[in-house]
Length: 97
Image 1 (cartoon, rainbow, N blue to C red):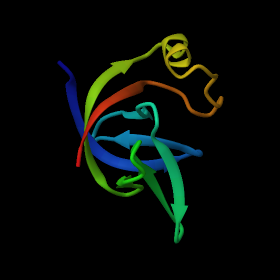
Image 2 (image 1 turned 180 degrees about the horizontal axis):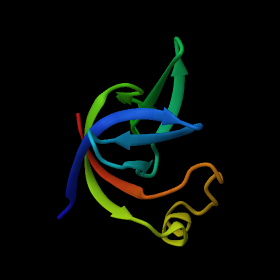
Image 3 (image 1 turned 135 degrees about the horizontal axis):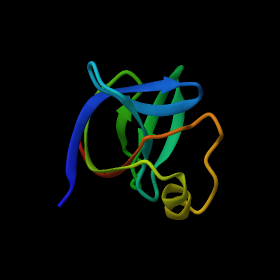
Image 4 (image 1 turned 30 degrees about the vertical axis):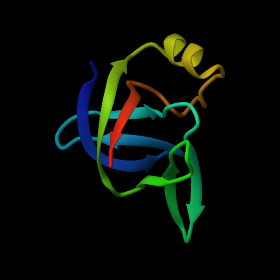
């Protein structure tokens, strides 16, 4: 079972985050196979099938869970995060499109 979160997808210091009204923001750790694309000055999130599932500025709903441990996150993604991309981290599962 996954937790649910919703908020605005923003770009902050070069990192994609989900920010909630009157709350903290989370660095999103996207599922394997997801990628980013810049299209007409808009940052898009593409799923593993190459379909656009979100753009910066969109209100999105995600399944998944939270982690405050950079070690857990870096083990999940197999590489270090950029130093400006700090937690807390939301490990995205289902994306409700």
